[in-house]
Image (tube, rainbow, N blue to C red; front, side, top):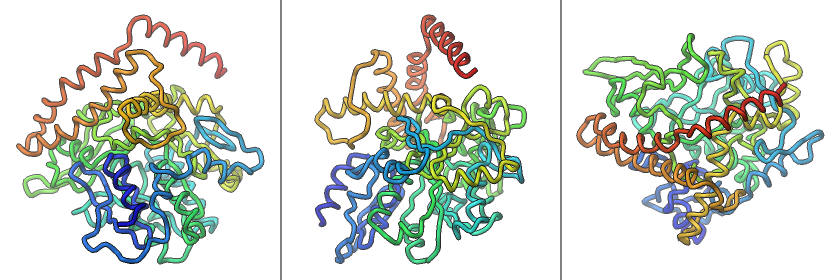
Length: 468
């Protein structure tokens, strides 16, 4: 076996640092094929008949969790020489930061938030900057997965891929499609996927020439397919009968961050559709991190720092009161910036500071920076291999924060065990009974003390004064 393949398996895959992006399986001569594992996560699996031809690319060099360049280095390479470029440790390189939404068409209505992701993709198509958009859509083969990467060539096809999908995805098949089909493409993806495309483009001239733009998504973490199946199960659709899910159904009378979930599938031989507010679903609390990929616990990129433009939810008090949704946008590529400047009548944009951009994802940054530093410390303490990150290993934080980060890891790990126990007896209540003590203990730990409440109130007051 190729030494690089062996090292990738022993360090990244076997230690559960793989995010399932599929880059290693896309390399010519790769011995891997992407499959959903027992936990509903994509992972590279060795082919029965391993190719004898030599790989022309070192798989370690393109894996986002191995030894390649980090996000800051990639960002500098991509954007560092642009005029008026700025740098911030949280946003990465940027030209402008915005909060806003699309005014034209149904982009905002059909999108998770302000509709900016699909609108930018539409502009790239209409301005003939690309021929196709690579993005996640409902799968044509739901036996394997509900969603997969596909290529859209028109506005109508783009609409079919609107909204976020909190679901396992891999890119090996669509990358192979790009290699076999000439054209210029834009790819929409989460931070680690965009990073892996940048790393691959450094080694593969075809990918570099054909994937012209990347649209990054703000990311909390990637979910196993057990997340979608659990939601469907609670709404009356058993896991094997789930055929579709809308993770971000907008509720007209609610805040933007109080959205619903809608599932569809078969029940007693009949097609059914059922929905509920996310907050009413047992697995709906994002902070609990249920069914999270372990690799996500070792990522420090929240804002897709290597993408030409990043879009996400504007989780700021000023914007969450609008149930239609508002995006935060980080622009790094001057061509994307020019698109905004030439279409100000079609979008609503407010320039915001790097500080406000941070605040819009403050919880995610705390977990991906401070929390990550502690997780790295624990790995080093136990002499375990772990990816090299921009964050330094450290245990210099309060005892409470340490316990919080430890319990979050436990919540994620135990959710897989609980789901399998429930599946074995075909009863979702078994999942709830198993998880309740763990979740209740975590909730009690994170509950703020009176002193912490007072400090937070003062900080909010100071932040409001700064914004003014």
